[in-house]
Amino acid sequence: MRQIISTDKAPAAIGPYNQAIVAGGAFVFTAGQLPMDPATGDIVGEDIKEQTHLALKNLSAVLQAAGSSLSNVVKVTVFLQNMSDFAGMNEVYAEYFGASPPARSAVEVAQVPKGALVEVEAVALVS
Image 1 (spheres, rainbow, N blue to C red):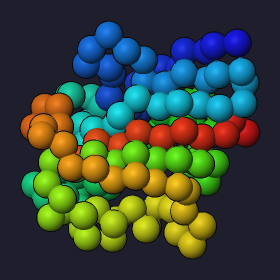
Image 2: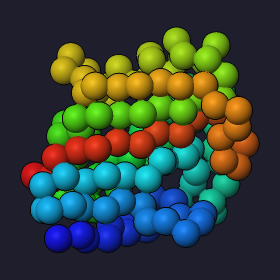
Image 3: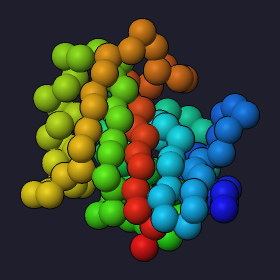
């Protein structure tokens, strides 16, 4: 079973992909979430902390639409425009994932879509 997930509480896809896919009714695989305002499609936030907050809020909205939540996340990948933003991203990330965070990779990339500083994708269990 493959179920396409779409919500207007997170930014619409900016290419030929879906916000998330639920596979087998057990896992949800999200697309990368940018720090975009869902209503305007604009990147929001002047620094890594502001952008990380919004990217994680968007991730949470997609997970909720799939019947999951941040507490069910098992793997996260964070894409950073600049690895020097790692500490600021980590500070905000810890607020969302707390004492029992999922497995995670963080990588510096040449460019994040739309000029953002961060993009976040996840794999989570469906509730």
